[in-house]
Length: 247
Image (cartoon, rainbow, N blue to C red; front, side, top):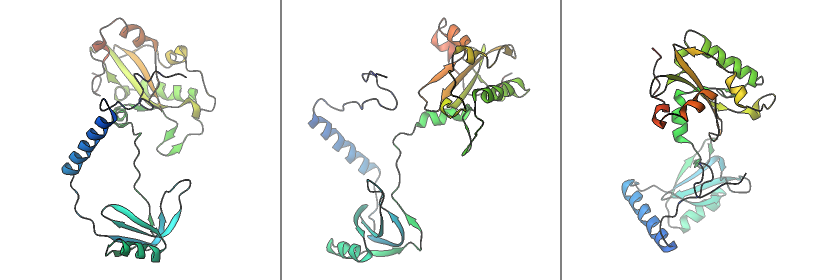
């Protein structure tokens, strides 16, 4: 599927240019680094050699393990056998103390630059419609099972706990996150007809809109009512309020 990168998307949008030239970019990045170093000052780190456990270096193409690892001033100075690391640390002028792992595992800290932080925060107020119960995959996950689940949630006396109010109070929204047709027993074609079959009628004299967010966060599916009505209203009329009980 072609992408227009002038706008970009959450996953593959190109990073904006910082300056007009490469030199401008480098100068600006240097200024950012200096600002960060000044803002988050680090105390001097005592040189240390870790050994006595499983040490993963996470080097490509496959992570290798080493007997020892030497660090000084926040930088990995040497990896390898204990004797090799001791020698290298001494050659670099570091008087390192030893840290025995006692059979434990040491590996680099992992940084995930692809976290959808805002989306993850927002879905705390949404309903889980994924294939998972905590870490367990539901082998019976299907559109039919999901439809029954949503119907049960909206059809009981506690349905208000699953709903969000819109800006003008005329509509209650059921917002589900984590939808993943690829994990369903049969991959369905989720069209408008399927969405509208999830719920008909009102709750507490309010129209019900259903919005399901794909697990990737890049795809959303809605019932027909909000599509028709939000297109004829000012956009503000379709905003969702913070989660609050239905009256």
